[in-house]
Amino acid sequence: MNTTKNIKRKIPKILLIVGVILMLFLLFQKSLTAFAEKFTSTSDPVAIQTPTIFVPGTNGTVNRFNGLIKALDSKADVLKVTVATDGTVSSKGKLTSTAEHPIIVIAFEDSSDETLPVQGKWYQLALHYIQEKYSFETYNYLGHSNGGLVITSYLEEFQQTGDPELAKLITLGTPYNDTSKKYNEAVTSFTQLKETSDLLEGYLTNLENIPDTIEMLNIAGEVDDTASDNTVPVQSVFSGRYIYQDQVAEYQEVLIEGENTSHSELVENQKVVQLLKDFFW
Image (cartoon, rainbow, N blue to C red; front, side, top):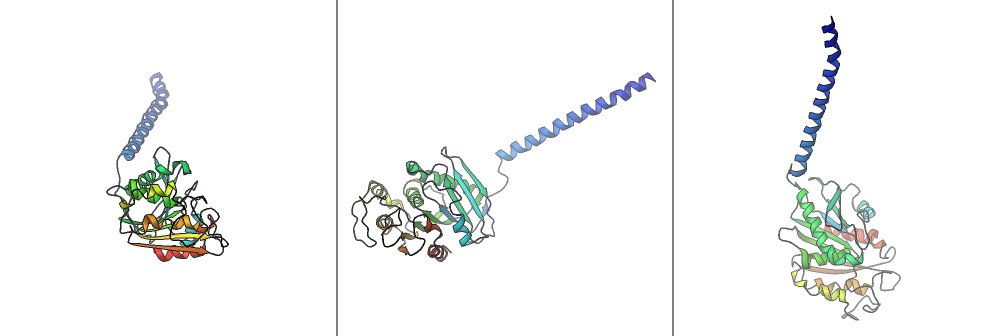
């Protein structure tokens, strides 16, 4: 009788020990699986249609183009990519192989004017990160404000063998010749610059590296006949011709006048939205 009682008392303890061992085993197996998934590629990149990449200007985030994207295609697949100052890349969203016009927004943790010299390199890191997840050979690009300088820097200095090819480029309100009146006159038509800024001079150094297959549209905004979008003079924007006009396959300039033509408003200006649709898609 005593033996039977002792066995009955031990059974719960045995079951508890077995349960603990089983739980530890399952936790170990789960951890091992997670570790393997982290360091092992589980699938090939997803093949997608030609994406359009958006890059904002100074202090712009991945949400800068939300209104524009809604106006272009409210149902579009969108991937938002952020590059940290140490070069690490993260993303939110997903692209599918069936999306007709996939959109990628790339922004930098620090997109201040001070980091502009390295933003072209950060852009290249973002491209590499994206191509590990998605496969595409060509892409289109919209750069607002300094976003136009980012792609210029990338094309001249940081483009790598194996990177996808830029097909169509739009820069919007980009200050190629800085923003100061010291360098720019209040004109919308000109044959020469008032003065070449150090910024523009830098981009004229390696312009021969720009691929000659690109089709480009350079857009400026003008508020109330001021020859400026209240931030960037039209002359500065159209100074992009000195970099691109003789290098690319096609170069056009467009001046947007009327309502919603200030620097920040240009991104959602209805004329600009239509130009983007017609040019890219």
